[in-house]
Amino acid sequence: MAEIIIDTYQCSGCETCAEMCPDVFRMDEVTEKAALVSVSPQITDAVHQAAAFCPEKCIEILE
Image (cartoon, rainbow, N blue to C red; front, side, top):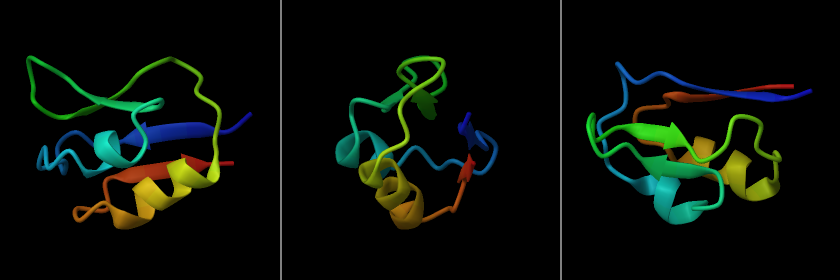
């Protein structure tokens, strides 16, 4: 099973991932950092694109 890891220390809160893939990523209201919508989201091409476009490169997909 694939897993998405978000390095919240590196995340700048730019919202790129949440805008590109709102079914998987959201912005945490408290930390203003990226978070997952669900515990085990489906890994799609949109998820890979969001990780690739992350300016801080803080999204890792383990497959």
